[in-house]
Length: 200
Image 1 (tube, one colour):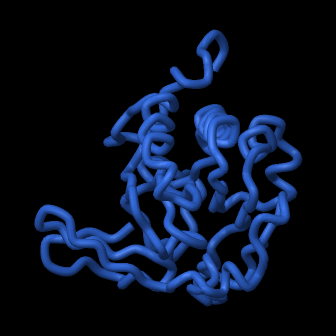
Image 2 (cartoon, one colour; image 1 turned 45 degrees about the vertical axis):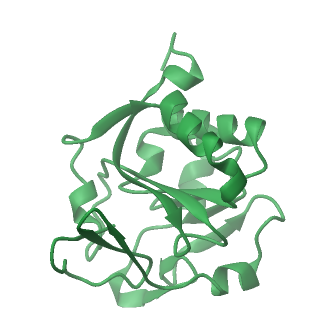
């Protein structure tokens, strides 16, 4: 966004989870963006598709929350929704985290590697990511493990930080209870909500 510095870029979010073990290796801060026009059939996060209804924050505010807790984290994961439909925000956040911490960065996207590399804004958005998991979700090829919803999704290792063994060890399901809300997250999250909870 021209004329707006990185930390002040607005970012439409669906939710954040300050502690997760099912969204990447180690303990991670997870950020679900709001808005996705790809509309993959069978997506288990359809509530993140609409562009409206988002919690709009700034990149700087979100980064400050993550960095304040960096000593207790191994990394951050950007998912959605579609993080690369807000490439300026995603890129500025990743750059801020990498410049000010040792945290690993993973981006889950429905765009393919070819689509990302062909678009300067999307390519810049993942410039500071250690790993991009790229490609449309295909429900006929569902695997729901190793951070891939379907087997066609590509591991794009941008650094040597993560390897196949790290991803294979990520739990497929996590249940978090906070203030009376039960949240299921992970690649094998249930297909429907239970009790007072939600599903990311």
